Amino acid sequence: MSDEAYENFDAVRDRTPVVGQRPALLVIDVVTAFLGEEGLSLAASLADRPLSCGPAGWLALPRVQALLEWARNRAFPVIYTVGDSGILGGALKNVVDDRPASRSAMSEIPDAITPLPGEAVIPKARASAFFGTPLTGLLIKQKVDSLIVVGCTTSGCVRATVVDGHSLGWPVVVAEDASFDRAKLSHDVSLFEMNAKYAQVLKVNDIIAA
Image (cartoon, rainbow, N blue to C red):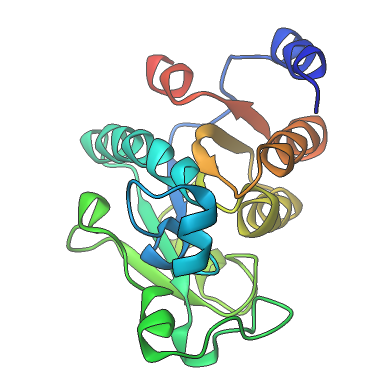
């Protein structure tokens, strides 16, 4: 996406969040397999961990932390998803790396965003956080009326979760700077399309300020 097109998207979108009185924060797959090692370039990160997103993930991580603090201070539900390391490859076309260390990294949440006691961590085997998981029932049980989605990848599991959340009737907000992908093009196009069809795309500061 060109800079001009991205600026046009930024100019026309509504920055007033559509979330309700009890949103849930969904932290999608922010695990070490997708983050990789801090400080590496994307190429070096991919060579070390084939699923990693390199610098984009580490740039988004403090913004995920900010939204976690905001949600917890208001007693909003916080729900994490991780990859089901027992069937790595179910969410993808092929098994990417069958080493035990790589499989465990699919479910390893970094210390910076460790779940608190009582916060659900849901393993999933497909892209959407809703497919084959108890997420829908958990949201209903916790009387959630809207969703705020962060994590990775923007074009993959975030987008799939947003589409399913919208299809099930929840208003959805995507935090664009707390979501990340391997390529800026994939990230930007996915945000553009989600904002047009399924969700409202906002920056973290806009969500918190509202």
